[in-house]
Image (cartoon, rainbow, N blue to C red; front, side, top):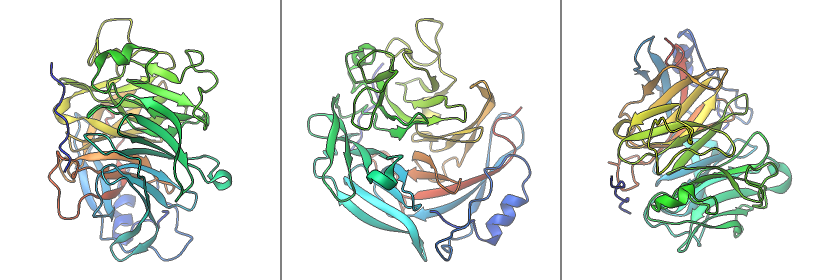
Length: 392
């Protein structure tokens, strides 16, 4: 099987306006809840959110109210929130670090450029990707970024406006399969996802940082309790993980790009092997951990992942939709996943829970595979209502 072709390079805010609030309150069942009020001033005057049903294989439709928060971006890849409710957003291809909100204007949240990272080399699928804000930001003012250079992928830390200081270098680089997600886990350690850099054997090589999920201290050192001793590796056998999220029980889930057949959602456990390149999708080989969910690549290719309550949301690129799943108390999937926003906004890249409890999604229509609309790329705010996802 051939790998997918490389890319061509080419708030906190008040609850919705009255029309949106009426839509959400009138819909019974599972809900993310109303966002917190904006204590900083007047609410932004967004257009009335659109309401879209999600289709699954049984149960009632899931309603989603969507508001566009920002437009005119270029491949917004990572999103992380500061304590004041502002979002830091990376643009993969421009190497810009943006600040979005919390201030607003007539067309949405204010977008300003914080800085451009000169070291970034945005070739192929590489560039400025993941971002995470220190859990101790009020004290250390530190932000972490994952990006490509001319020779490697790396993780650096910085204070806003200053030059980044690398803490992990030598992550394998390629035109495709660079991973790139960063997030702090509930244990306080920094997690990073890496791809196999189109060298399939790296995923099974414990000595390589390629095709792995990594776990580290804020200085880039192996975190205490890592399964392979003095190693950053947390799990292995991955092709290209781009989304990670934790549930209320501190279990880790990840989205993973397959090759030509199956894309996956996996529950990640330390030291476990997820099978690539020996396995794509489900397998009876007990050497490897099987996925919770698989989809055909044409309807998925999910990048970002986020969890609110029992709901796991995966933002999909090629599938141009959100897959919404209900997690069980044991860490499985209840019923069938539901597809939301089918083909409404094009390719969807990131998914992150905002401080007000809403879900932010970024589009990726300027990444060389999409068909950009005049307002692309966008950040979209979602609030769900209606029946629980996929409940049978």
